[in-house]
Length: 338
Image 1 (spheres, helix red, strand yellow):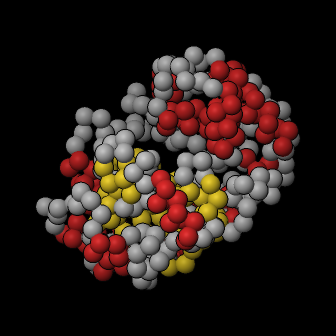
Image 2: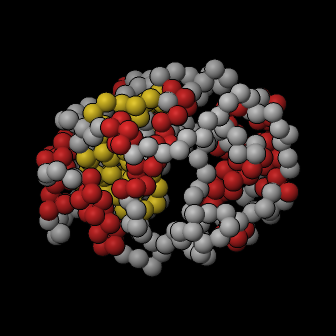
């Protein structure tokens, strides 16, 4: 079993310290709302906010990829990309697909979990994990996201009442070998062993440390505390993709997150979030909330917005691709998110 504690559960990221608390959460919420857990566990609580986990104490025991149907696309497109990824991960033989890799069907796409032989800890290594995940998924068009320390993910064998679909465990090896593999529409008891959290323990596992050593990257070292001045969100240039996406009365959730991350990174002049003082952090939150309040979103609520901004502002990584398909621009890596 790979369900480690403490971790966070639910969209409000409630602290969960035991399997009993985890199971109780599912029994109360499943069928009423989608059930989420933090992708990773943590070693300690945040020193400033005891109701949250300390991001720097993250215990990353796996790589993770999220694939989802594109607008106008088909599930077959997603299945094709996931099969390609499994082939890239399974470099030596097919045994790895049954031992270290688990796949969950979410109703519109797939979550792929690749377990490590030993967990790696701390946010300093997260950027290398991000490099690995994106390298393996290069050119796969239906990729919707990769794992990072603050990531929440659907809990397998739970029901999404909004979409009317279950997130189900599947037999990874059978899915990979058989193009006509029949994905179950409901949880099956015999597939519980493949659950990436409560199923059988992974055998062997991928050596992410060796990959990082063999694929070095130029490091940006963060030293000392941030000594600049927090600017105004209204003075920050907005990438055209993001500007177009926020010019709606009810933008998508991913768009809102991208906006907050973009503003936060620029407000701190690209310094690491941990280098901000409490005062600088609060000033950034105030500036972002003020900016959003002027966008005329129909569901804007200052209290709710402030709550979510304060939970997002500590993210180190920001979107590296356009949030809508408008093409390469000055702010991103020249890759359309198609």
